[in-house]
Amino acid sequence: MKRHELTSEQWSLIEPLLAPVAKTGRPPKDRRLMLNGILWILRTGAPWRDLPERFGSWRTVYGYFRQWQADGTFDRLLEALQIRLDREGKIDWDLWCIDGSNVRAAAGASKKVSPDTPTSPKTTLWAAREADSAASSTWLLTAEACR
Image (tube, rainbow, N blue to C red; front, top):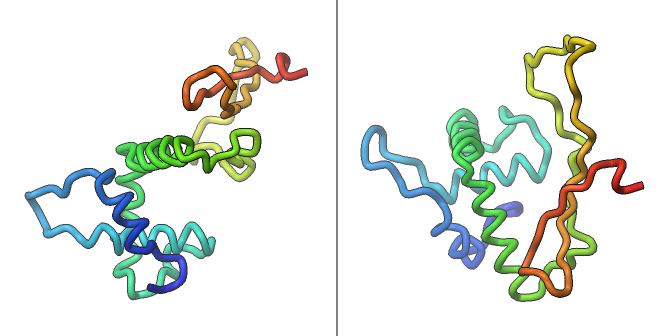
């Protein structure tokens, strides 16, 4: 196993959570190899075109990334793994957060806003576990409520 790749144990946890392979069209690529390529990009921060050849064409790996992003595969993976780790007591909800400081606005989105357009208050997502609540809960707090 190379650096930045899933172990067999990790793959056995994730594989059942991936969408079933389509039985029409071209033969699908190895999903583990595609996921390892995606993880390599995410962990190194390299451009897609710099993906090592051992993962196959960068366009194919990027296609799987976009497909799994669009169909909610990554959301399902994160949720299933969070539930499992929470059940095993391996998540400290006081420290859990997702850094959104590098999230960009959608490309090509209109930047012109009418002064009459109502705006929503800024929302901060907090993931936390209360002592008497379910395994996990998400709270939406406005910036004003945090003050």
